[in-house]
Image 1 (cartoon, rainbow, N blue to C red):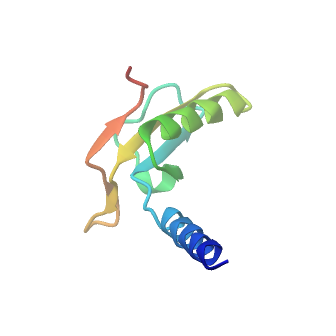
Image 2 (image 1 turned 30 degrees about the vertical axis):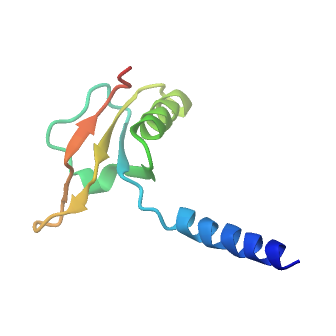
Length: 99
């Protein structure tokens, strides 16, 4: 009985930890645009946050497929933070799955 109590406490604590992990990837989606815009304001195009680049890119491709026009572009930013000018700065970007 005592062992079961500690197992439940461990499961509870690990579930809290999993819920508080910060996602490292931010999806930027541009509806009805075939190519990524060069000077787009990133903060107005955020479409989600993901733990991995693969999750982020798959969601972006799904948004394109589900769009009414079937056209759209997307990119995923790694470790994006707000900058002094009110925009976002990301350490890097990916727009394709790399194997």
